[in-house]
Image (cartoon, rainbow, N blue to C red; front, side, top):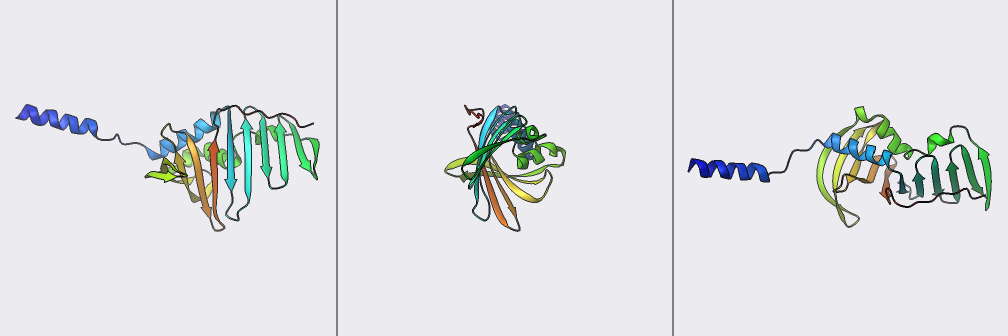
Length: 181
């Protein structure tokens, strides 16, 4: 009987989910995105404005927001104004091509990041793991969604103006960014 109870206890303990560190899970998701060779983002602000962007590391970014379009390749910046492309030398532009500024703030301040596990949630038709996150250079909470592989999929960032939603896709996928002129 004792052997049977010991075996049953071992099976129950083995079947229980491992305790995860929510903060480490979120930090790893941000750091994985920061190291990605490429990714696409789509953002919608609380006011309904949309923005999309492609990032190719190192040194390339293509952003579209309403009528504005900008491409950065290393230190060269191209801006589409009134239907025509214009080229500018913009020292420091290459620093803009790292992860999107919101992501960059979390990655740079990852020591100050704190996450609370909210469990699985169905978002955009997919089951993702949700975390409430504070820190990373912001003074408000964000909900971060990570897929089963630990990849960052979505951030819902709420402040007094409302909620901004950023979706990530095509991580490490084929994305080409070339100079328009």
